[in-house]
Image 1 (cartoon, one colour):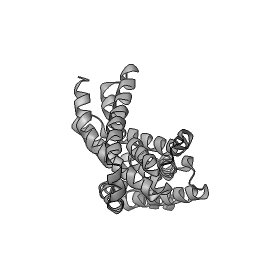
Image 2 (image 1 turned 90 degrees about the horizontal axis):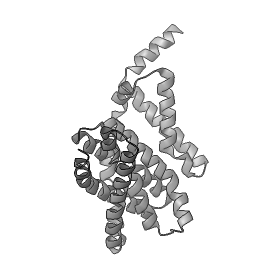
Image 3 (image 1 turned 120 degrees about the vertical axis):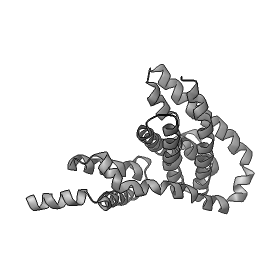
Image 4 (image 1 turned 135 degrees about the vertical axis):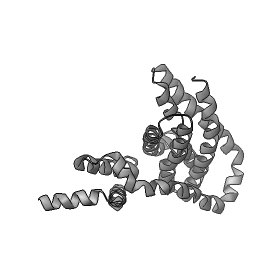
Length: 238
């Protein structure tokens, strides 16, 4: 038993271990999602997080040690976001026909997401540093962490809040769109990407390529607009 423990101690210090754990957790989560016919609640990101967190808890591994090995996945967030330009190019004619409605939805959605989060947090008496981390909750993780860090907030807390927002949006978006009677894949996808960033975009691509394309557009445009608006909004908190 002591020999097995020694092996585990050695492996736990190897960065490749936690990268492997992350990838295996996601593969298992994706199989579970597939077995449930991609049910919104069986979101692979959510299930993978639960699996990974359970492994960390059982092994007593601190988050810092885990991130040293899994940070390569974090690095790939940037290239993955840029790669969304490929479906955008393929459906460029469809995108151009819906350009004005998209811009209107972008402005309204971005402002509402920011204003609702900050206003509710202030009414509940949440400390300023938490409000700063909460303000860019609807943009992709890399962008949100950069915005919060530049404003003197906690980027780790921002990442957690972004993931919670994304997972909630990915679970709710399909039933909500069905209940509202929204059938246009462009509107469904754009809503998912605007409110739930990367996780919502991944969910939209599971539904259709058109929905995924519009979700990717919303993700990128909302990140750009939020990076401009959030510093202005946070300046009033002082």
